[in-house]
Length: 134
Image: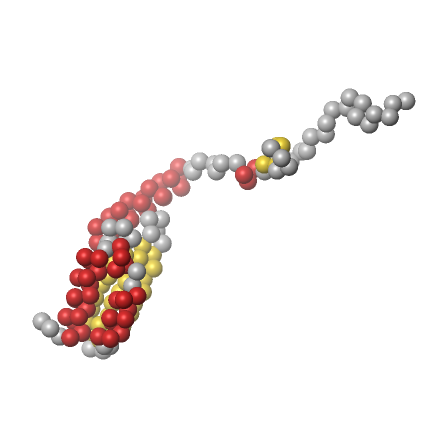
């Protein structure tokens, strides 16, 4: 009788499609590259990208942010719309009753770094609306 426990038997293979990689790490099916998109999903993403490109004409070049200023009886209404390429859209509405609050918002708005020329025009328009310099 032999004391060797491996006496030529074939190794046992796991049934859950795991493969051995260097070291002790195993690769699962989730680690594999993603499946290609189906026709409908590709068409939907292409349509969203086209609509975002059309909207980019109205927005800042890099970050897709648009501003709309309206003077109301209570103050200056600023509508900030930020859109993403895949369809997500964030709309913020701000009401400024005095110039100090508008200046404070302008100093904190991150768009001032992305498109400084356009942002300075926004600031000038806000000053004109709040101060009544027309």
